[in-house]
Image 1 (tube, helix red, strand yellow):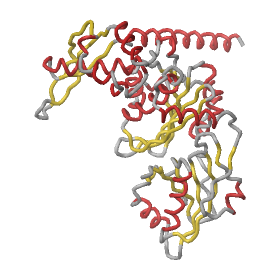
Image 2 (cartoon, helix red, strand yellow):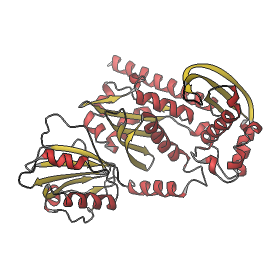
Image 3 (cartoon, one colour):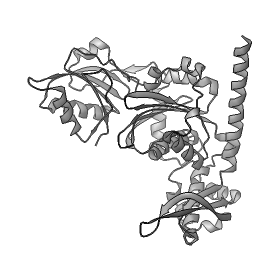
Image 4 (cartoon, helix red, strand yellow):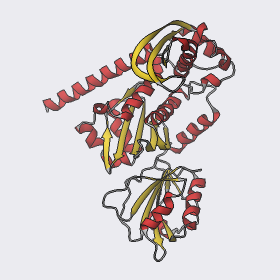
Length: 413
């Protein structure tokens, strides 16, 4: 009993220290920028790039440099810079003739009051350090047929490195789960892979984050990643699929999701599309038990009714799906967002010459599962070969022991 109490106290203390240190670091870096350059001759361009990075950090708006009034100012960064210098690095960059050369790091400090005045003059709110709580990040990766949760002890993993770098550039502190026995009991591999929002929220309570980012990630053979991000905040739930992104682009997408959530209430001039999307997501999760009927798609509805298929307001929660089927093939397609995408999948499958009949098994969030009957003398391999030629589908890694099961990521147009 005493041992458990001591473990709880030590864990809470470590989390508190992490919160204080990370928040302080984010505040001190807010008006500083670091840019790689080939030589001191690139000083002017380096200042401009650094100025834009600081404006993005301070405002939380990715496109701040395109805002009328500010777009003209970004070309005169010297009016806002108070100090700069150059540091040696171990990194390299390409010269003008494509040769790899040592890179220098240009370090700049900008005038806090002048930048805040610039933003205020153009009706842009400042995202203050005190409004930047820790964002907890849960990650699970599927690689070579194995699924692995990634946490605090995996700091050298490419995904964690990319997320850490991107979060520092945006001055948005991240927190990684300990993945200890308490985490394992609260959030197992199945719930994490399925991105079950309620379970993830419950497992995150011990960390007291400002928001939660969760992602299931497929590691592709070309060192890119496919999968889905899930953002959870107060009365907010938003998910976004991705396909064949680099670790850096995947990280940028996740950090942007969280930054938009934090700054939505601050920015009067936030992009209208983003505001509408956030509002729709907030409405959709005001009651996570509310479910809607599947839109009519022309698919066989008998299986759907038998299995109670419904379109839930939660994020995609059907992976892993039951892989056993009495039909020729069970097909799972992730990333199907909206009625139009649903109808496109329907039409695609109906038009395949290999397919005799399509039965809808389950729809949950952005995941759609079908059972497929093949025509005579047609095989699963022939169906897969045909689907692999479809530009709107990316095949996901096969699951061990699932002879009749295949899964794809829908990438749309």
